Image (tube, rainbow, N blue to C red; front, side, top):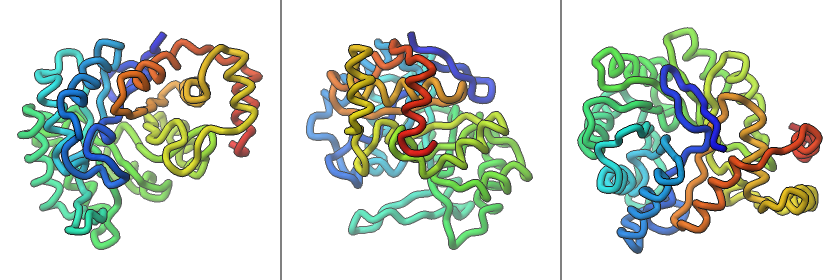
Amino acid sequence: MNRSVTIGDLTVHQLGFGAMRLTGHGPTSWGEPADRGAAIAVLREAVELGVDFIDTADAYGPAVSENLIKAALHPYHGITIATKGGLTRDAERRAIPDGSPGHLKRANEASLRRLGVDQIDLYQLHMVDPKVAFEASFGALLELQDEGKIKHIGLSNIGPAHVRRALSMGRFVSVQHNYSVLNRDNEELLQLCRAEGIAFIPYFPIGGSKRGLTALTLDAIAARHGATVRQIGLAWLLQRYDKMLPIPGTGSIDHLGENMRAADVALEPADVDTLTGLAGG
């Protein structure tokens, strides 16, 4: 059963969908998908399976993911769309942060147009720009919120120090970063979010490209529950924090179904403790 999580005044199912992998192949998320129809079918199937939180960014493609979401799901009845701004790509496809207020406001306008909405449910700063004062970037999002173009503000790829600075400036409802059962690099960030009641949105929630879920302990727990290792990794996240919102992404309907069935896996407290101990989390 896909439980619910509250982000600001939004209530969504606790398993969302990350739309980065619907774009062109490779780690840079560049270009159109090999099969546009298949990508649209995955988005629609996700909603049929109970997903009502879709996460994307203007940098995915660039622009491709947002366009696919509009083509598949607009006008989004009962669906929360989260997107991001503040990350650009150069000619070599390298990620270049741009957190300047002018860029963020232009990026927000472009996302509004591509998604076909007047207000974005959750708009996230994609990355801190070391060339721009963080207060200026966050302040631009606060201004967009005051103008009604953003309902809720989120922060992505950010550290605890910036979270504390943002808390002193205004309200935001979520933090997104890399986190999984075998990647606890952002444990401090998660615990800060827990203390402040901020939703935590882990990307690469089943290991990502850096670390696969291959530990023998995971295999044993998966076998005992009649589940896959991917499902166990997601189930562990769902039981760690009541404002945890994993966004596993895939371009495959089969993998999508596997991911969604993780919500039906009820780990015992001993399983959660064992998995938490794998990386000292």
